[in-house]
Amino acid sequence: MPPPRSLEELRTEIDRLDDRLIKLLNQRAAVVVQVGELKSRTKSVYFTPDREKRVYQRVLEQNRGPLDDASVRAIYREIIAACLSLERPLRVACLGPEGTFSHEALERQFGTRAEAVLLPSFSAVFDEVEHGRVDYGIVPVENSTHGVVAETLDRFVASPLNIKSEALLRIDQCLLSKSGRVDRIKRIVSHPQSLGQCRQWLAEHLPQVPLEEVASNARAAERARDDSGVAAVAGLTAAHRYKLRVVARNIQDQANNFTRFFVIGRDPIAKASGDDKSSLLLSVSHTAGALHRVLKPFADHQVSLCSIESRPLKGRPWEYLFFLDLVGHVDEPRVKRALAAVAKRCHAVKVLGSYPAALPPP
Image (cartoon, rainbow, N blue to C red; front, top):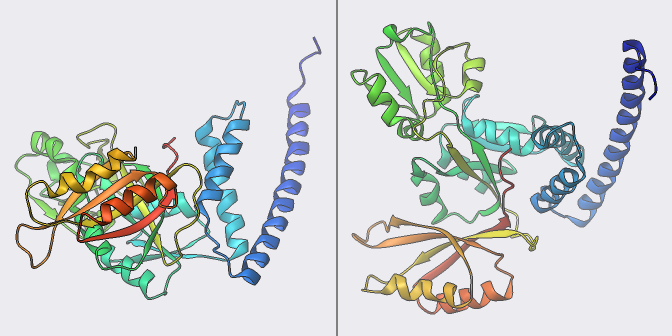
């Protein structure tokens, strides 16, 4: 066996590897600039989540360690984001202020190079994208503990926007305050979704403390920063941004707590990637067996449904719209056949988007 190398020799080897890495990264960036110029000439879409997914899958297949897959994904997330900014800097809207889980999801999806436009509500995110003031928006659609985000689903009813991609973010809720002392907490504030995800823990540990809903968990963190009697339910990102102390960590009722986000935009639906999901909006008649008849063609054509949610039809008491997620792309023959049959059995079918299925969270 060769003799072990000295610390200085190992560091010299690292320097040589860094020299090669920086040259290769800039060679990659130079090719990306050419891609951006080509997209500009052909008026092509800049954000292509199907391509990004293939890049992640390819590099993870090549990964032999000792870096784990989560580290490789984090590194490539920033490489992809930095290169995308060379093609064209993107403006992306989400719920603000800084430190919300929506803001964290934006940075996970687009990297830190995208310009984050922080807005007061999910509805405002839709408005900014619809009016072309930003390129894309990112909004939560459902949480594994607390269920659907009603405001997001309701906006899809009349919105012309398409779902471009989905992203899954692990949500670890914390109780934060200025002092870090539980005996000084007089009020707990957060977004309704965050409070709902921690309802059992709060009832068990702080049953006498009143709860207050605010527009976002980052807004709650701001309140806690400014009032020593207020505690916020929010993530560690908010604790760092607003210089709060952690009273308790991971207080969500379910240990595996994830929120699913949609990236929304004005781009047309992308071509099938081979591993896609589609989201639909259905309006059915208010008669016995109507929903069964509408859903039957999916089973007949072997199209798997991931989820189905109902929302009240405004102005029509006791009538509902249904949101469906299915496995497949609307251009696939079996999905096309199923949708053609479904369209004959309901009042309306609206395709909200077909998009690459999200990679599992690290």
